[in-house]
Amino acid sequence: MKVGLIRCQQTEIHYPAITCLVNAAKGEGGYSEVGPVEIISVNSCGGCPSKQVYARAMEMKKRGAERIVFASCIFKGSLRSLEFPCPFAGKLKKLVDEKVQISTIDWTH
Ligand code: SF4
Image (tube, rainbow, N blue to C red; front, side):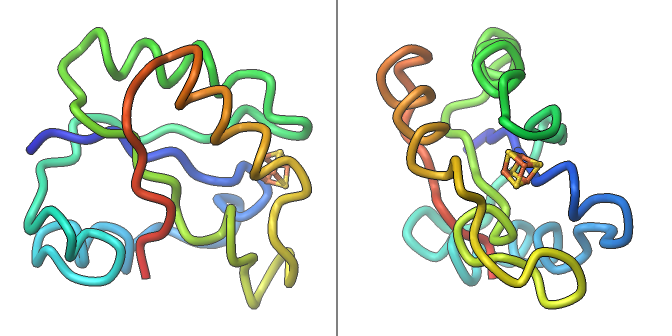
């Protein structure tokens, strides 16, 4: 399965997505429901309040992504940056579900 990975822009400043990528290759963590995946694109939300998510997820879908994966920093927060979930997490998931019309995976590790 081909997927597009969307990250929190505030987290990508210091975190290189290593566990998100390793788990994708192994089909572990949030990917365990679908098994190993091929990440065809990685991008951020565009920064608060996440207004680029629609355009970026749409582009990923256009280029072959079958699911959009939200990096764990969005729904779980990140220990070294935002220690709380994205305050817009629910909205951005709804946007992708309803406007981009593609299923999501909501965590990576
Ligand atoms: S909108 Fe959410 S995911 Fe995007 S930078 Fe802000 S806190 Fe991070």
